Image 1 (cartoon, rainbow, N blue to C red):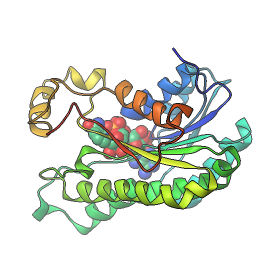
Image 2: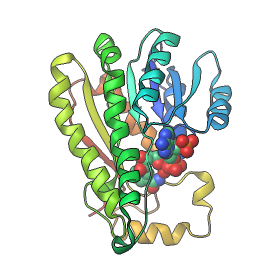
Image 3: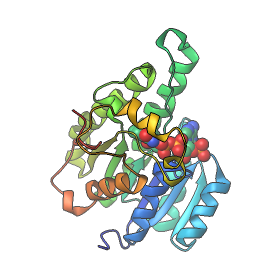
Image 4: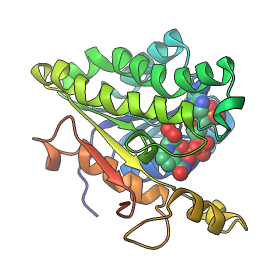
Length: 246
Ligand code: NDP
């Protein structure tokens, strides 16, 4: 495997489960130092142990708390001498009838999925400017097309998509690239064996060119590409990892 991130420091939010774990493992295999952020510190510690504590740091962080995100970015930069890549992956979905969606639901999804990207980009800005680094947001196929019973999530991920496109213009002159990956249904090994997996695939991806579903490693590979110098002239892009939804 290429070692595109040797000596680089990558912050991954939402690294305590699912896609975030796949992203962190991918960067670790390519030589990066990892800063793992989420609320469940025990899970972050276990992943840091797996990746090697010399190259991985777990930082308990609530991404909806601006000060906590800033503190995490500063600790990350202090530990490894800077930040080269910010992956804002932490997020939540809410599968609910529109009529039953409360204001509290709406705000929770918005703050977890959208504010988190804003706070992350602002917190990492000075560090990324120094490293001429890059940001990758984890959006969603729902943010490009919209899905039933996901009104708050559709709105939130649509915001992440357009935040990405616009921020690329703001930060390009500072040498920082900003891109997003938009996965469709992504299941880790545990979930893909779940009895409901087939129904989930049918519900979320009724019209796909490719059979099956994506995995956290598929998403990690797309994120690593966008964060790497292989993508040095790509910014403002939203890369679907969706098996070719029509
Ligand atoms: P998981 O529920 O497995 O993981 C969500 C991650 O986000 C966890 O690490 C969780 O950590 C973290 N998180 C949630 N809220 C907060 C918070 N307030 N502060 C800090 N961390 C938080 O979901 P996935 O791995 O499936 O999702 C990861 C991203 O991918 C999300 O943005 C999601 O919207 C997106 N996505 C997922 C798809 C899928 O099918 N799985 C498809 C398309 C996009 P903790 O609870 O420890 O804080």
